[in-house]
Image 1 (spheres, rainbow, N blue to C red):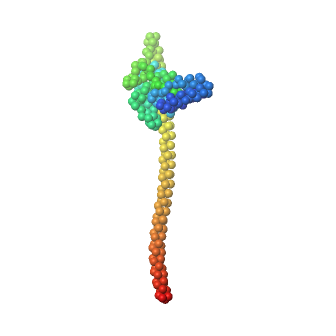
Image 2: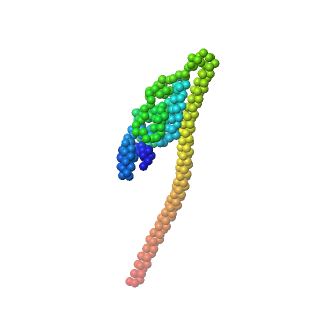
Image 3: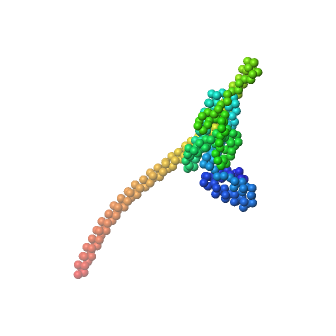
Length: 291
C-alpha cells in the first residue's frame, strides 16, 4: 500500500469524514498483513479547518503553491542586499501574493459549499507566509497532507506580520574598512551590491510573473469553457424554439380540424333528426293504410 498516496486521498476528504476513512484504511492494511502501513495510517491526524483549506489550495493550485518555494527563496536572498525602501516595496508585493492565494483558497472552499471564517483565513495566511519563509514549510504545504496550519518564522526578513507591519529590515552591507581606504574599490563594491539587489528584484518579479501567467491561463480556459457553454445553450434554445414553433403550428392545425369536425357533427345531427322525422311520418302513413 502506498501510504503517501493514501494520505493525500484521506486529506482531500472533508475533516468530518477523515477519522472513519482513516480507521477503515488502517484496518484494511492490517488485514492485508501490512502492519507498518497500518500504524503509519493510524497515526495520521484529522486536519483542522485551516489545514484542510491549505491542502485544498495545494491540490487545486499546485503550480502556484510550488512557485511559493521559488519566490520565498528569492525573497530571502533579496533581504540580504536590498535597502530599507526596496524591502518595503518587496514586502508589499509579498502581501499582494499572499492575499491573492488566500482569496483563491476561500473561493475553492466556497465552490465546495463551505464558508470560511476570519480565523480560518488568518490561519491560511500564516501557512502561506510560513511557506514563503522556509523551504521545508513550502514542501510540506505542496504535499497537501497538513494536519494543522503552519506558523511563519517570527521576524522573517522583509516579511509582514499578521497585523500588516513590516518586519525588521536589513540594510545593504556597507563597504569594509579596506574598501573605505580605496574609493575605487568602495564604488565597485557599492556597484556590485546594486547589481545584486537588482538581480534579486528581477528574480522575485519573474517568479510573480510566472504565477500571474498561470492564473491568467486558468482564467482564459475558464472563459473559453464558459463561451462554449453559452454557445451550446444558445443552440439548445434555438432547437427548443423550432420545436415550439412546430408545436404551435400543430396545435393550430388541430384546432382547425376540431372546428371542421364540430361542423360536420352538427350537419350529421341535423340530417339524423330529419331522417328520424321522415321515418316517423312513413310509419304513421303505413299504419293508416293498414288500418
